[in-house]
Amino acid sequence: MGATETLEDGRVRYVTAGESHGRAVMAVVTGVPAGIELEAARIDADLARRQVGYGRGGRMAIERDRVLILSGVRFGRTLGSPIALSVANRDWEHWTDVMSAEGPESPDRVTAPRPGHADLAGLQKTGANDIRDVLERASARETAARVAAGGVAKALLAPLGVRVRSWVTSIGEVVADIDSDPADVDPEAVESSDVRCPDAPAAALMRSAIDAAAAAGESLGGVFTVVAEGVVPGLGGYAEACARLDARLAAAVISIPAIKGVEFGDGFAGARRLGSQVHDEILFDEERGFFRATNRAGGLEGGMSNGEPVVLHAAMKPIPTLTSALRTVDIDSHEPVDAARERSDVCAVPAAAVVAEAEVALTLAGAYTEKFGADCLADIVAALVAYRARIHR
Image (cartoon, rainbow, N blue to C red; front, side, top):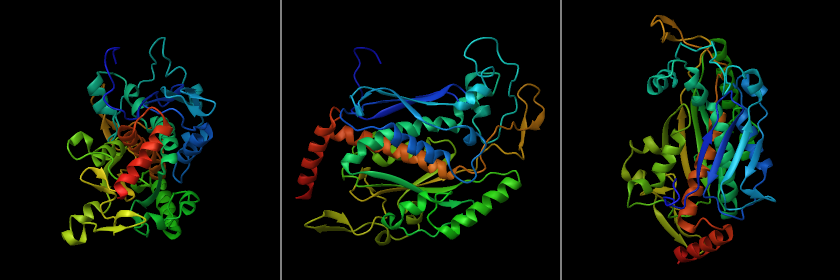
């Protein structure tokens, strides 16, 4: 951005950097108001949640993710300047020759692109002759930086009364029996489960399915739910496509590696029902103000939040790195070969849900600062109080 240019809007934004086996993955978060309490320990807790989960691979046994806050925070509070975050890659020490920033090229080239991965399309896009140039950045290791950035967003949302959480609803063909009301889903039951599923019988079946996939050299995908509670109505917009909050949220979540679908509320199920069975009737109470009798829309109407919990579901495909490799073609010889094998997970759906929390939090933080200001937390809180009083009348 040049010196004479201005920011497009007041939204919280982030950018990440770093390769899977480089020194670190990093994030820079901009548009963060001053005065937010931000502790590394809280970000570390989310980083730890991303690392655990039944079916994770050997890489997670090596890494012990911890965030290093490099700028934008002083004495535990944000300064209003860009926040730089770094998460070291402990595995870097085993890859110093292959991932060196200088010196001669490594003879250890990867030439067998994996079906379902960014390998071949990325190679064609960039003109590289080593698939590692692509796979290192396309790796889901990058999402550790997103989770760190999301920790900043969660710290902003907390004093505004917003909480973002997630759980797993299915892995493979195993579907959990979970109440449709997010308020009835026990957070402790989710976090105590190694597949992040509050339905204990289903969780046991999920573990068995993961074991069976591992034994067969396969991988498994699944579906998870993310819920944001306490969201004020009127975030986003209806007048322009780019303002629609559901569009922003969908784009943010589907940007996570291996996510292939996003729906809000009843989503596709609503397409099979009559209108009277889909739309949420509007009620009014002197204490609550306007509210909906149900939340089939997932807290979003007309591109805006409507005051009900924001509920989205995302589908994650099986990870494309298989120990029982699929067929591919060598980029040098053009001969059929087995796809390259990288150390990977059997199932990462529980971890992907934590990453999606970060993306949802970042999107909502951007929507709040866009509507209520981005300079100072105290001003945002005051503006929010005034807004709630107005819409309650």
